[in-house]
Image (cartoon, rainbow, N blue to C red; front, side, top):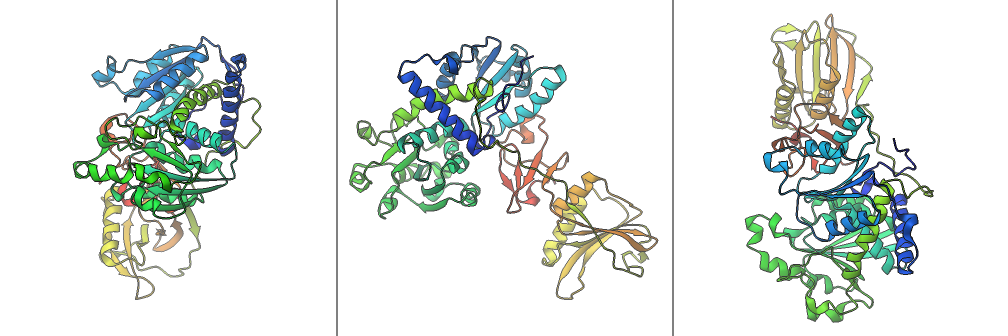
Length: 526
């Protein structure tokens, strides 16, 4: 079995944050070394893997030219086994799951790297889970996965080549960047990847230029602000250029009409006009401005018209070429050829402690008048302080959700009552003869009703009392699912993905796979 050589080998690139900022900088430094060496005609073998037992599999479930061909050429550079998987004639047409297909291909090489483009968001993260366990069971090194674009989610390797291109323009100065993101920011996964990719710069100013129908989704803009970026918004190029603080770097994205609903499609001419650069704008640009675009441009309605191709503004052609160099380095890192001299801070996966149950002191000295009908609760559980402080209708809704989700079909009572202060209401559910909840049910209750208390009643007295806080992670629960229909974990895709959510800083539940935020009430299957 191949020995693991460094901290990059065997890892996956499913989102930008799979690399720390220092690791991203290392990727750019190595790409710069490679590009300069090749420009000078030097022998590039110090970058080359040269292992015929390593298989690089290109699996593109959506059409692609630049990403696919740059990865094909990058893998060929490394002198490894390259497999261009033919999706059109595959068993996907017979409704085979993607995990079963990858398991089959995984068996054909000693080591494997899968480059996957999919319309389903979170596909590579799911495969990393599924194939990692499978590899351990059969005693093989786990495969690496590279996300070559997944739906409206992310395109990390495009982001890496973009950041490399920006650094080239800025002569490797990472002190600050001022960038305008122009076009379809709602559906553009290359823009979404910039939320984290731009963190390689110490100071980041982002100008969002798009009409409201194409605006950056709120959760991505929120993350930009959390990352310390200064963010401004403008409805059109014309509005943007009417003020004086114009960015020297413009990043355009095409209007992805295939991802839009009929209502937006009807406005397509107006939307295009808002984000298409015109001749009349040339004199308003700062000196040295450069335009970038992940390509392709729409041949009939290009955001960057062809009259700009021969001007110094054109940075998109060289940007496209940089995909070849960055992807050579990415494959080299995951295969263990590169990375031994890395000295920076590694990516540390976030911790999600299960510390959502807090035992609190019992202050009652006499039997509490918790009742089921007219009979006091002698032994059982009382869930108290449900939705404390909410209005009565919201508390009743909370109680209903708890009973449905936790399937509390027992002899019981429930209702809305005054709290200790007559100005505040709270919900109570009394469950006589139910003496305990297991960890799964505790986690469910904490997620549905954070802040509630759990009273364990014995001989008509509260023997133990617990306060439940919002869990940092929810998983292994049948009653939850991601509601993003484009997510690999969405039940309608029948991939049998284990549902998992993380709690964000603003109290949302974020799907582990597509990273779509949900309110706590949205994740439950009622």
